[in-house]
Length: 364
Image (cartoon, rainbow, N blue to C red; front, side, top):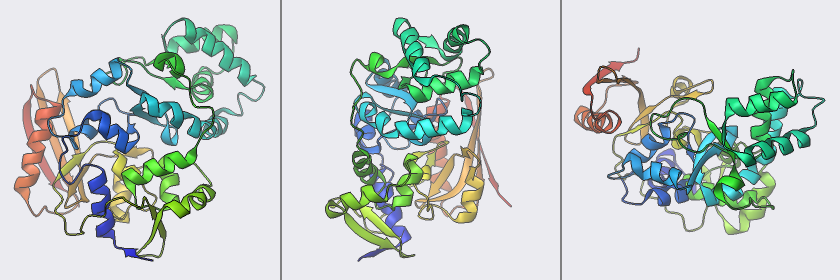
């Protein structure tokens, strides 16, 4: 069985993530490759696409949200993502049981005597009549069941029903109350009735392979997936990493040369690349991971030669039209000019009207 070193694994995922060079693919094609883009922060998907695509514009994604080709909702790991509408229709059923378990863990104690089927039916009825913000939906439900925990009501509905968040949710710099709609009503098509986790495994490997079962479980939020991988084993290529861990991949997926150059890239909060593995040593050291991934937050990262070299934070004062980019480096960069040029491109994209400033600091 072939052993793949960390640098080969690094270049493989960078190539599949459009991070070895900016692609001229369409936004739709990026979604088709990457499955779903993390969207907890409103601007994250736009910065994710900017880092991967040549000439990406804000309206390239906004238009897909507005025409319902892309939807924002709870998907992988029980967190907010964006995905193509046609992918959401099969993906949401695959993660449904995971969302129900998370709901039970968080609110099972306060909702032990609730009729969850009745709650789902009433919520669907309310949302079938109009699109409401989440607070308004909770108030309507509280009128039916006075005294129930409002937070438990809102999150329970989001787990029980396939909920999406229509625009203006998901638009650049969007803020305020989040609209909610039932996905099959918003998309205009029913969800798949037979969840197929194997389909998600194949899509994951196309975007992040070679990878282990634990890597897939970390990325997807699904558990006990060994049997699914075993069923797929005859159609997959199998490797090992330097620690002897079994890695799976699609048989025709590319493995670039480990010495392929990797450009400087600024990745946003919760970027897919950083969250895609249980073992993240192909991108960073375990010590760096403790700084980048803190609790539920995954900080923005600077890639140099394909690996995490630091973090970055953008302070955009829109009122005074000033934007300061602070780069916290784990070590001095070998090519300061390349970092400065990419930082300038980031500021021009994220804050085009502002006065720009870049500040670099070396973490102690």
